[in-house]
Amino acid sequence: MSYRNFRNRLVALLGAYAELFGDVTPAVEKTLKVKFHYWQDDVVTCLEFPLRLDIPRWCHKTTLTINNEPSADVTPGEKFYEIRRPWKPGDTVTLDMPMPWRLVRGYKVQDGRAALMRGPVVYCIGTAANADLLKKYPEPRDPTSLGEPVADTSVRPEGLKVTAKAWPPGGHGKGPASLDVVLTEFVDPSGIATYFRISELSQAVDDELMSDDSLK
Image (cartoon, rainbow, N blue to C red):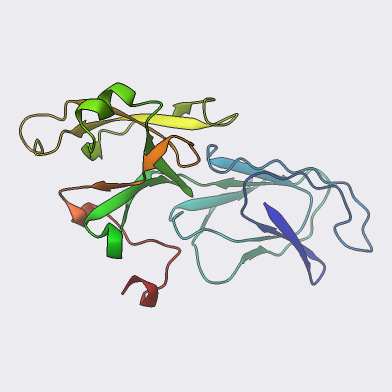
């Protein structure tokens, strides 16, 4: 997470992990410490400062709660979502940011394929976790039956992975998916594919980070 001092407000931008010690404004001396693991925890908590939030476009059902007040829905947009109110010591802002699995449609050289994402993180097939499978089936298709991610420290501390069912090439629709494919975070050094052939491209969505013109 990165920060900007914008018109005497602390602006929080989404990022991976941060610790901040410093002044909120020149007139207000405070010490802040923020830890933000948004790629694996749905709930984010910030304390005691005016906040402008950059809600990512992949997060369609964000809710915001201040202390014990009723929750409010927050929608992504081109502008920051700003909380304007007087703050007192101990005030707490909680964002609930569900991160369901989604298939992101590929374009150009990846046409006909889709990438698997959860929140901002892309998942891949790595040779380290799928050595035996890939010897027999170099290109498993249609990852499906996705569960919740589980801890995986083989790639990085506090990393995640998920096991999916998939079909062998030519096997889609011929009985239930029979292959167990382990998908790891794309930083996996043994990763060989982040885009997969899927039979139903209608299940995939456009990449939220790309403009309409760039997709042509």
